[in-house]
Amino acid sequence: MEELTLYSDGGARGNPGDAAIGIVITKPNGAILYEHKEYIGQKTNNQAEYRALIKGLEMAKGYGAKKIKSYMDSELVVKQMKGEYKVRNPGLRPLYESVRRLEKDFDLVVYRHVKRENDKIQIADRLVNEAIDEKVKG
Image (cartoon, rainbow, N blue to C red; front, top):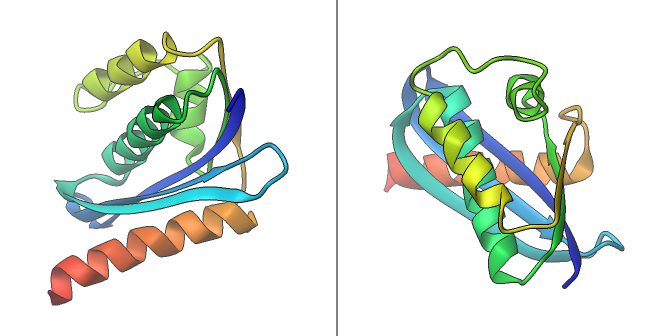
């Protein structure tokens, strides 16, 4: 796959609290290629957003993608990745650096902020909640 689209979301119940990630990877035509959900322990919302992006990039790399369009509803993470905001939080710095290292595996990574109403972000958000529910109730 030359180009893939990544929709990622992370969330925590409490800040920090029980956290999870949700990922939807699509082909350029919008067809869903893969969905992933994972409980990640006690994290902040922003840490979860970064973890979702990291996992999504790792998965896209596994599909052999060279170009990634990454969509997130986290304005903070998108603006940090685009260089519009500095990464001041010491808890986010190593996660930011992990993303920068992963970017080197691709010819192009584009970051875009989308609203929660985006249909694929809604799927990613549902996956986050399912992962937390399964862990908490399990």
